[in-house]
Amino acid sequence: MTAKSVPRVQEIEIPPNLRATLCEYTDDIQDSVALQRQVNENGYALLRGVLDREQIIAARKEVFSRLGEVGEISGPVESGIGTGISCRREIAGDLNAFWRDVSTGEALRAVTHGPQLCELLGRFFGEDARPHDLVYLRPMSVGRATRLHYDFPFFAGYSKRIYTAWIPLGEIDQSEGPLLIIENSHEFLDWIEPIRNHDYQSEHANEVVQRAAYEQPNSVDPVTLAEQRGVRLLSADFQPGDLVVFSGFVLHGSLDNCSTIGRVRLSCDVRFQPAADSTADQRYFGTDPVGSAGGGYGAMKGALPLDE
Ligand SMILES: O=C(O)CCC(=O)C(=O)O
Image 1 (cartoon, rainbow, N blue to C red):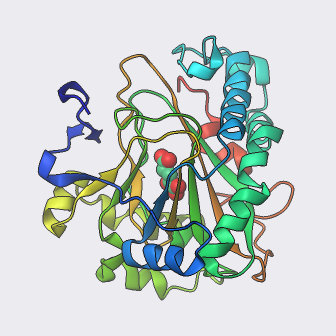
Image 2 (image 1 turned 120 degrees about the vertical axis):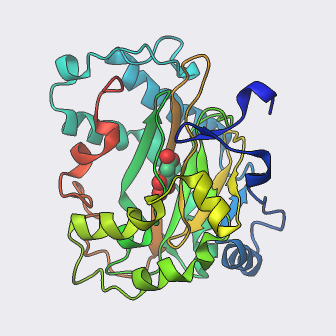
Image 3 (image 1 turned 60 degrees about the vertical axis):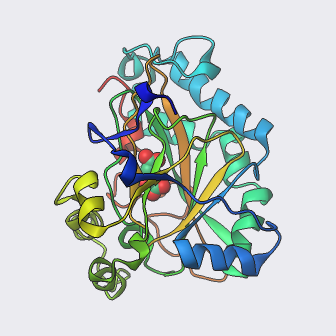
């Protein structure tokens, strides 16, 4: 990391004493007990080079080709350089259908719903795992970031055993806005206990889960939050094939995308639960899941043209 690419969050440079690199898992990836230990201790596990690099690159090309067709990414599309303009509304018309189509592309699904990831996630549960059908594909333009939140309120319901798989679709430098995790946030019991004790199967209106996930963590900026809690902001430079798995009780978001060459950061996050748990939640399962907000793929940020 050079001096000119100090990571930023919500337009604030993160002071050196408040930032650190995510801890890498270095044990055997076949070792279910060691994987579970790591995620229990840290709330997350960063696994390097565990996914098929060629499949990741194919998924990146597939997604950016679609964005290239609507004028948002310049060629060669693999570089992911945004044009700053979009013809998505004019060319694609139905933004919901377009985003559903991109999010269910064959190459992308080979990564998110292929056996490699599913078997790996199964080891975190110690039993067979199943991905949600709904995935969150995130092309993040320069200047964009994801605010801090907990995943549990969104995804707990019929199953409470949820892990998120965060997959960088290509190389992502810390200056280009990758995943941000708040150190030890799985131990912020004053925030976690109310979430853990809520019955999200009975009550999961979008306003309820949004408030539970976002409200308190965003009452101050992330740097102030880290100072107040005596923790650090964790991220890493990512390569294709890397994977972060984290629990629903880990506070996370993203760094700001400050790419100096206009590169759009691309990643996908997918939730997994034990295969034995119910798939009755229509928000996340089925051929056309409705999502937390009820609007399906059309309600996701990714469904909006990149210049909006
Ligand atoms: O990639 C991001 O910007 C944030 C990811 C996220 O919020 C998630 O995986 O739940």
